[in-house]
Amino acid sequence: MTIELVVFDWDGTLVDSTGRIAESLHRAAVDTGLPTLSVSRYRSIIGLGLPEALQALYPEADEATRQVLRGHYARHYIEATEAEPCPVYEGAHALLAALGGQGIRLAIATGKNRPGLERAFRHSGLADYFVASRTADETASKPHPRMLLELLEEQRVCASRAVMVGDTAFDLEMARRARVAAIGVTHGAHSAEELLGCAPVALVDHLSLIPPVLDRLRAGPHVTTSAQHSLSTGERP
Image (cartoon, rainbow, N blue to C red; front, top):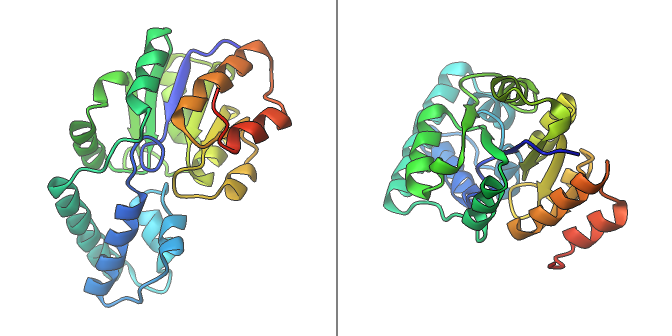
């Protein structure tokens, strides 16, 4: 397999923001007068576009109420992030620099909206690694494959030469529908069991373990089940 493009999700994959998203949703629900939900329920919708996420969380609320909720969420999340930016996961800079140094193009496919991603780029210092990005307000929300397919078309890369990296079932299901190999990271929003249900080529619990997976993909069409298991249990190369 020749790898020309690696597409990353943002929240929970490169940046440790899932706790802040869940807390902001909780505070927004209080402000809106809606029932508060468990942290696990809030985490379960991370990866969707915000309108789809709020509809999934509060299907009983009318559109006007969800718009109010959306405004409160944005305010809480932006205020918290401006005060203290979400940390980049250990190994992210090194991984992106190494892949770029190999001539692999890098892109972002995220459930954020465009203003949110631009703020995140500024706070993280990661923007210069990426040649392209798509946000949920510009195209269909995950797990629809359109976001990923648009990036492939823009970069003139066929699906068999691309890899998707994400921390949610929405990321991996999007990749499956686009016929793109997917690597799941287990330090984000969804559990390893949820990720395995979308048939990734591997699961990793640290970003430093992604290069060995890519090496295996270059060597053959599939990562074996045993390799998948060893990577997901935290072994380091």
